[in-house]
Image (cartoon, rainbow, N blue to C red):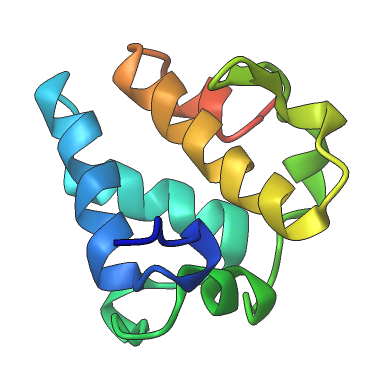
Length: 113
């Protein structure tokens, strides 16, 4: 079976994995939802879980203007150096959830002064 692109995966497949990563480290679904809202403008209660992950980011209501401040590595790749804007958005969310699971306070994760 060919490997499925992350762009083509359904939100219903990826979102639970993000929540599981956070919950394994004692964080909550509500915190993951807050991060998603901060980054994309989506309230998860209104998201069509059957849309593709690529469309989730392509159609995001409001990418946060401070998202460019997200720095660091995900899977050994620096998120600030990713050239494909869609992949960069996906990795931004991965990085934020990694920070959450790593115990960072929400104020720091959400780049609040």
